[in-house]
Every structure is written in structure tokens, then in C-alpha cells.
Length: 340
Ligand code: ADP
Image (cartoon, rainbow, N blue to C red; front, top):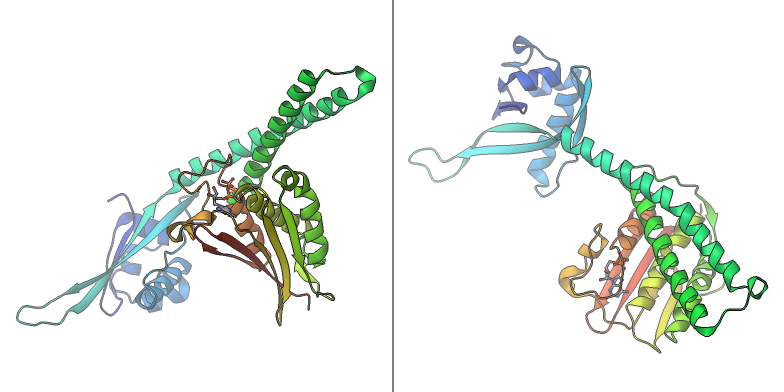
């Protein structure tokens, strides 16, 4: 096998370790074979981490361990751990008996490298797109001014739709750029005490035109004296704008969007409730996955907004959740920690 494999008996003594496994642990055959992992773990970081996973695995079976980064043979590699617990039923007996464990480390370095290359590529392309699209929008604004020359009705309509398309392109490139920050683990946060009500008012302002187009009203419920939260103003405003924009896109004309802020002991919650089509139960958890869109969704979009929102909010120590009654609407709630 080209992947590292380590076999342990029921007492966690190493009974087999192939050459690849010896390479990445940096241990010679006589240093690893026949030794107890508990002893090896004292001096070997990798064995310690594997042992921790092995113990954790027995109690919480469903947790998928993160890939590990290992530096061996003068290069960095990524490995996915798989731990198999081996049991047999001895002849003549009925109960199963644990006889050992097999640890397989699947080398995923090549996939990781491709993934990095893809993230870099998307980052570069979306970054390069931003400037020309912004300048298209600026030129359109100039064209709309009478000083340059009067436009007839048809020309004005054309400019209007070019502007809509440019806004949409700018939104997509912005989402892709944010996604690359998330994927490369480079979310740059500046966390300070922030006023959620102010952020909410900013988000309402940013989505006002979109709401007017569908004659949607906002109903705001916000008690006085809300405590400040520990948050990155800009990122939280981005998330809230995205949630309100979704609420507008996925609800019907002439409806109401309810925005409310509530205080708990150590946290402040802000929720965005719409009375739109809602989300079917089987998709409730999936909507936070990257590029996921509920099948049949007709509105344009990338399926990235909620995935980015989740990462942004969790990076600030907060939470984002959704409650939805299919056919009756959805409520998205952000929970952020109060300033201490
Ligand atoms: P996008 O809206 O660009 O597709 P999002 O990540 O914001 O991407 O949302 C993912 C999916 O979740 C959407 O495609 C839509 O199917 C569903 N969704 C999001 N918000 C709502 C909402 N308020 N009501 C109903 N469905 C929603």
C-alpha cells in the first residue's frame, strides 16, 4: 500500500507499521514495532494525535476527524485518517471481541494542492473582475446624468438593465472573493464592541430599493438599551444584508419582513423572519453548504451567501440558525456574544 498503515492489538501495541507509516512518524522499525502507543505518544506528536483520535472514536463514532498536516521527507503532506476497530466472534462464542485497530492515513496532498490552486485562481479572477465592473457602474452613472446628453426612454431602460446586470456581477464576484477567504482560512476579523441596531439599520438601508421593487415592508421590533456585542461590524453587516436580501427574494410581493432584536443573558439575538415559501425540512441543514441551492429555486444566485454567512458569524464566536415551516416562511437567527 502507498498509504501509511499502522496496526495495533487490543492493548494498543504496534504489531505492524509499513514503510510509509515509519517515514511519516520518523520512527525506525525497531523503535515502533512491539511498542505500546501510549509510550510512543509521549515523544511522538503524530502518534499522540492518532491515539487521541482512536480514543475519541470509541466514544463519539460520528465525528469525522480533520485532515492532518505532516512534514516528512522535506515536504508537507495532508492525510485523512481512517481508524478501523477490528472485532471477531471466536468459534463457539456469541459475543464479539475487540482484537485490535487499523489506522490508515490516506495521502490527500495532491487533492489539497489542487484545491489551493482552485481557491487562488478564483481569488485572482474575482479580484481582477471587481475593478472593471465597478468602473462600468461609474460610467453608467455618468451616462444617466443630463449634462452628458439627454437619453430617450429606450436608452434609459437599456442603461437600467446594464446597471442591474453589473450589480449582480459585482455581488457574485464579491461572494466568490469572500469564499476564497473562507476556504484559505484567511478570514480577517476586526472585532470591537458593536451596536447591532446600527448594523440592522445599515442592512435595511442597503436592501431598501430591492424591497420597494416588490412592495415589501419591514417591521422592526427592537427594545431600547441593547447591549453592545463583540463583532466585526463590516462582516456582520454583510451577513445581515444577505439574510434580508434572501428574505426579500424568497418571499411574495406585498409581504412583510419581521426584524427583531432580543437580549439574553450573555448574548444578543437578531432574527429575520419572512412569510415566503419556506424551506423543506430535508434541506434545512444543507442550505449552509457551499454552492447548495434548494432544487427548483428559480431566483438567480450562487448558493454561497449562507455558507459565507455561517463562516463569518462562527469566526466571531456566534451562531446562525434557521427555523422554517415549509410553505409558510423562514426565520434566520444570528446570536452574538455581548461585550464583557
Ligand atoms: P443563493 O440565495 O445565492 O442561492 P444562499 O446561500 O443565500 O444562496 O441560499 C441557499 C439556498 O437556500 C437558496 O438557493 C434558497 O433555495 C434557500 N434559501 C435561502 N434563504 C431562504 C429564505 N429566506 N426562504 C426560502 N429559501 C431560502
